[in-house]
Length: 224
Ligand code: DX5
Ligand code: ZN
Image (cartoon, rainbow, N blue to C red; front, side):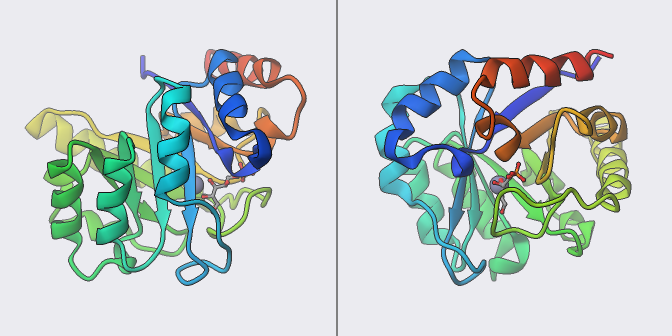
C-alpha cells in the first residue's frame, strides 16, 4: 500500500495570518506545506519569497515543499534551502543546467525535484533519475490557484509512475509523485489510482472553513 501525503498549498491561505494558517492546516492533518513561489517572469503572477519561508519555518515542523515557478532558478533555490525548505522543486525548462540545479539543492540538504507543466515532456527525467527525490506533475497551467484539473494529466501520472517503479525496482531508493492543481475531494481517488502519492490542494482546503473536514474526506477517498 502506497503512503499518501496531503500537501495544502498556502497560495490560497489568508496571507495576513500565514503563521496561524500553517499551524491550523497541519493540526487539521496536512503532511506537508506546499509553498508556491511565483516571480511574474516565469509565470504571470507574483507571490512569496525566502523571507516568508523563514518566517513560517518556526510555526511548523511539517516539511516545507517549495515549488519554484521562477527563472533563473539557482540563487533562489539556495536562498530557500537557507530559509528552511525541506523539498525544492523547479521547472526544468527554467534552468539552463538541470543536473547542476538538482545537485545544488541536494548539496544544500534538501530533497530535489522537477516540475512538469501539462505540455512539458517527461523526457527531461531521462538522465537525472538518480538525482530526483520528487516528480511534480502540474494538472493546471502554473500561475494561479483555483483552476480546473486538466484530465489529460492522468495519462502522464501513469507514465511517471511507470518510470518511478522501473527505476526504483532496479536502483532502490524512493521518488515521490506529486500532483498539483485542481485537486478536490471528488477527484483525488482517481489521481491516486493513476499512481500519485502526494496531493497538493489549495482552494479545496483553504476555501472551506473546516480544514480537517476536507482533509479527512480526502483521506477517506484515498482509503477506498
Ligand atoms: C499553481 C500552483 C498550485 C495551486 C494549487 O501554479 O502551483 O499549487 O496553488 O491550487 P488549487 O488547488 O486551488 O488548484
Ligand atoms: Zn504548486
